[in-house]
View 1 (cartoon, rainbow over the protein chains, first blue to last red):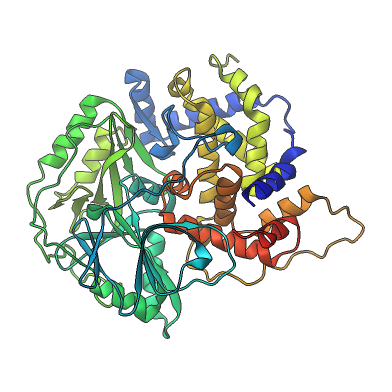
View 2 (tube, helix red, strand yellow):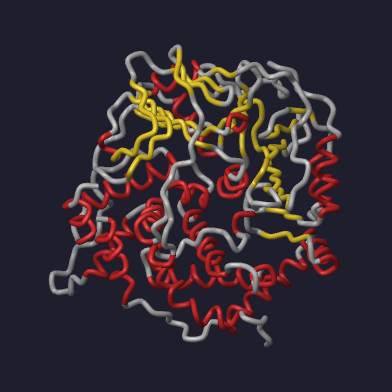
Length: 359
Length: 169
């Protein structure tokens, strides 16, 4: 069937050709105009100077994943990408005592639900009331959504994309002190579900960076509330930020498509040094901001409108860690995907922006 | 106006394919060519990093995909899948019902993010994990977009609906 679909899509564009027979002159003009615009646009002007001076610091309106290394998988048609294997990124999980446990996270298994692990299943063949672990769901089918929990791999590359595509990130703290990140759509969705009466079918997708887990919980509102209420984590000792020792690049995603990136090792070391020097961990159970909003029966917001600061592994050119940072100066804190939460001094984010050439 | 070394050759060699990719991602020839050009402007700006050691084609396609995905972000989430596609203009019985027009019409009727996932999954041959990594979303999001797209196409008329309907997935 896949071949048939591909053939139809190929046929749909078989007769499509460029209307502009030679786009190069126009592309050059637009590219250069964009550079001039950046060069004269306030803070971006300083960035342009930095680019000319060092060739190493760039400020772009694109996110880091738009700068793929040569090894980045192509998105060209399958005929051009032979040999790709469709293997899920596995998580190591155990099932015991009514919980799925992975990376210090415990997700409750609702009474009477079955656990399915390590399988490839047509989406419509997955029974209702299932907890899926390492299950490859094959697309297709015209079945309805059923109550289901899916435990998926989460990676630090997700935060910069989340911030750049959807705006800032929000953070909830579990009772044991571990953070849960919600993108702006997720937060808006949780707010709307909470406000609406009734037991409507819905979906929640929180991310647990410290466990490398992204959850998808779908079901009636009451079922989702019960699952989220039952999520627990191994207690965490308040600590400074855990950070990578080195990085090939650092990128600050501020939302609204604003990114600052540096590959200058001196700049990266200064940014890591600033983060390492933060010495006031947030205490377990402490919500830095007073009057924190309740987003579910049991989850309260620790912070909203957080920026993402992401470090890239030098060897494999993928994100190795990401730090969520409050964008406001009141009750500001930062959380690392590798662990640790700390209070921030006033002006901290501005200092990072300055280092990256943004101010 | 002097172009950087290798850039004109890259554009001339890949432009037609990029326009076709853009047409599928948007469901429209004109928008697809605009999408390709916008991405190529960014490729031009990044050319010193992409040439000769990088993969400018993959970079350009990635920029296109992310821009097409972003176009749908405002309507991104939590919608319950509709049983029928939005109302379409009445068909002209005398207009040729060629496959290309019907397929592009069906793609256009999909929400942007469902269309992007469908094209990446079935045309580009990317796995759900690769798509999730590319778009910065969870595999669950990719799955739900794909399944909703297929469910919507099955409710419509035309060759894509038949292809999805006739074969088990």
